[in-house]
Image (cartoon, rainbow over all chains, first blue to last red; front, side, top):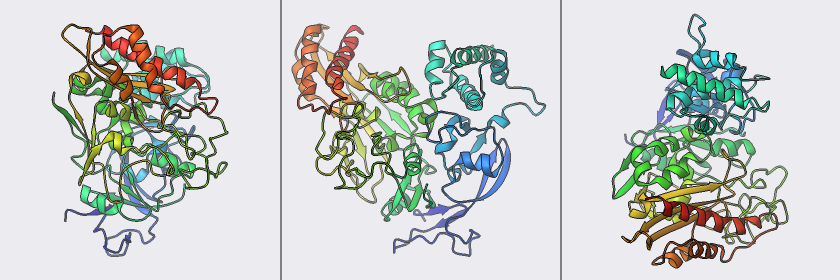
Amino acid sequence: MTSQIHTGQTIIDPPEDGHFRNGAGSNGLAPSPTTLSLHLTINGRDHALEIEPRVTLLDALRDRLHLTGTKKGCDQGQCGACTVHVDGERVLACLTLAAQVEGREITTIEGLAGEDGTLNAVQAAFLEHDAFQCGYCTPGQIMSAVACIREGHAGSDEEIREYMAGNLCRCGAYPNIVAAVRQAAQELRS
Amino acid sequence: MRDFSYLRADSIEAARNAAALPGAMLLAGGTTLIDLAKCGVAEPSTVIDISHIEGLNAVDVTADRAVIGALARMSHVADNPQVRNLFPAVSEALWQAASAQLRNMATVGGNLMQRTRCPYFRDPANFPACNKRAPGSGCSAIGGVTRGHAVLGVSEACIATYPGDLAVALVAFDAEVDLGERKLKVEDFFLAPGATAEQEHDIRPGEVITAIEIPGSAAARRSTYLKVRDRQSYEFAAASAAVGLELESDGRTVRDIRVALGGVATKPWRVRAVEDALRGKALDEAIVREASELAMEGAVDHGANHYKIALAPRVIARAILKLGETA
């Protein structure tokens, strides 16, 4: 009982012959060994998915669930455009398998504003400070900034620059991004 | 990315059983594995997700020793108040690595398994020759663009730089990696390429890293990690140094000193020649600078990385002198 493996919703004992039978019949798993049945909790809502194991959280969000606010920039973990929150912490959706975050709370840019459309303080500050030009990196910048402030890493401009370094802006809107994060951090503290 | 089977382990024992399967690879934070799978470098037939195993992420720190669970995230360890207080070089190495997002994902156990950033290693479509990927196929970096490549611990088979920061601090302070059945020094866990560039770690099929242990010491308490790079943040080291210092009661004679280098070697590189030259000596700038040069004994450059031979001793000296100024 101590030695168990889950595949999707299923538990399999590691076999002696070195081959996993991933999806044989009786336990409700999809018959194809390369398809998983997943439930993801995104912005407080449950989503059921049938996907290949290799599908990243980013591709699941954009291509399967049509939550296209999360952007695909480099798709290699270098630009930060795909930043989302998993259990409240900022991570890169492009290097996260969708299967890996089953059971976790996922928040995307679409889940940031209030239900009545009231913007998050960071979103409002980005508008006020014109903290973007083309806007492509902006959802990732905002998701990163919300977490940066929550972590307590937005205490000075220097600290904001260091802890926002994982979000690249090719338009070079950095001074305005720092100003927006600084203002939102002050508002959220007071 | 080639498709694979996905299995989720809920215990270390299950992970060990699964890790022994041919073609299986363990998935923790995913920041190396998923990246390399996209590059076509890693082609697992089965991915074993160990990130849901409970009880492997504890950070337990006393003055005697830090025990860090393999699944502890880099960001959490970096921000741990006792790690910052008793092992500052470890905290600094962690928060200067990667970005906030990657540090939230990456685990310390996975970090020890991080692969090189050698651009030839990462591009199999354009550069089929790589002794790390395909033993015996040759090295595309030798004779290529080498600005980021190693000058220490290199061989004719491979000059790829070990890219990490944490392990540099770990080897400076005699940390051990716990593999369950056995424990070994982190310094011995990493293997220089020699003729077998494909073997980077002393880890066997079915072994899983469960924890990292760092002995406490006065040198670890008074330590720092200095990382010099092409840009101020979110970049791999051009050269880095983990340094720890203990002075005699006179406040200027070196009782204990630890020095390890990153960004310039094929593995986390402890430099005992520098330590031996400074133990018992006064902490004087000229003496420190002269001793720091000893770190480059045996260094071999391949053209564009020549600057590292000049840079690394200066990084060591600056880190030691900075520590000497702190009370």
